[in-house]
Image (cartoon, rainbow, N blue to C red):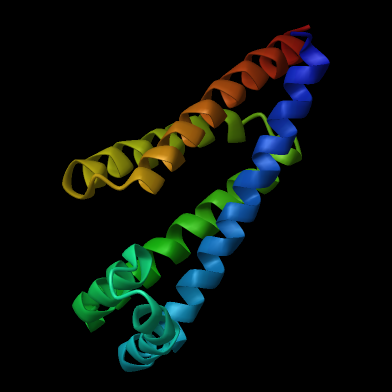
Amino acid sequence: MNEDRIHRIFQISIVFKGAHALIECIGGLVLVFVNTAHIRSMVDTFTQTRLINDPDDFIANHLLKFAGDFSVGSQHFYAFYLLSHGVIKALLVIALLRNKLWAYPLSLFVLGLFIAYQLYRYSYTQSIPLLILTVFDLFIMILIWHEYRLMHKRSMT
């Protein structure tokens, strides 16, 4: 595969990572401003008709279980987690898209920390979406490493 194509894949992947960071920030802000009772009420409203039609609906039952277990402490943790990850990733994405050389190793380090935490969480949850996110992050790390080597080589000449 030629370098232009790899660079384009890198740019597209980083934009997707930026979109993911924005979604995390929005989710974190929602959790800051919406109380747990309202979250439970929204889940009840969303799942009510689904469960009437199909009492064994997988998604609706899991959402209800999640909402039932969702405490104020959980809400604060998820709000902090989503906002901190979102802001950090957004800043790194901006720096990478602006070709800031320092952002490449910092992004590798931060993504490595996120991956370590995600794998730790996966060991408890066996969450497939978390595993998919981890694989995507590994793919991004490979692209960042490749781009960093090229950028570093260009800056040396």
